[in-house]
Amino acid sequence: MWKVTSRVSKALCGRQTPVAMLRSARASSQLQCRAMSSNVVPQVEPPVLRVAGEPETGEAFRVRRVYCVAKNYAAHTIEMGGDPKTDPPCFFSKPSDAACNVSVVPYPPKTKNLHHEIEQVVAIGKGGRNIAEADALSHVWGYGVGVDLTRRDLQAEYKKDGRPWDMAKGFDCSAPMSELVPSSEVADPLKGEIGLKVNGETIQCGDLSGYTWSVPETIAFLSGYVELRPGDLIMMGTPDGVGPLVPGDEVEGWIDGIASLKFTVK
Image 1: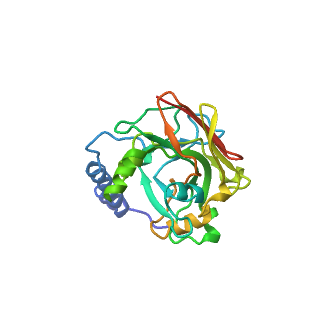
Image 2: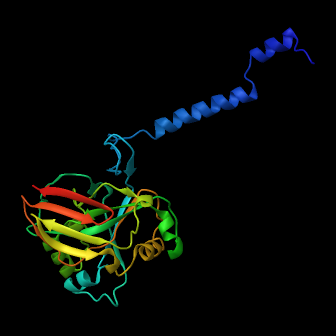
Image 3: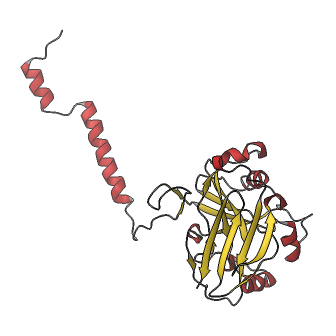
């Protein structure tokens, strides 16, 4: 074996080897990146939804985006003045933090006609673009039930004026949801009773099979517009029977075989 003489050894000790120089450069670069990427405002924790069977401090589903499908239930499309035979899927979004696990929902300002819309929630676990309908369910992490709260008076006003109706749909706590259930624990995500009670009285009741566009069809259609990613939620639309809520109302929603939720309007 070759031996390193004391002179060469001293020379090597006096300067950095190529590996050491690379490590030093990487460390310097990382420090610069950290300095450049520091937040100018306080960091806000991303919204999360609880997972069924997990403690509050356990695993959770981090929400990236919330997509909603409008007029996706024939009877509701008709009650809103549409034609289920000709209207294609219509998508809109809510803020990610509209999705929440809460027991109390504050009555929102700027409205005198808050409406409930009970809906199936689809949680995306694997992303993709132009997802084939036949592969769509393999992209689903789990399911839940949620309520699309709507400032109906503002929505009607904005529609009449041809203006966007983001503020009719996308306000604080406008999408209270149940815990999410892994897809492996849902026997059939395409069938099952979906309903909503207000103060113990059933107001909405239908079946998941009544959706004009099924979960696989909706995922395939939506992924043609945007790239779906893990953390995305899709609110599938509501049966007919939407109606008003007032402070003090006790709301209960459910999908048989999936999940349920309860909250009070304050």
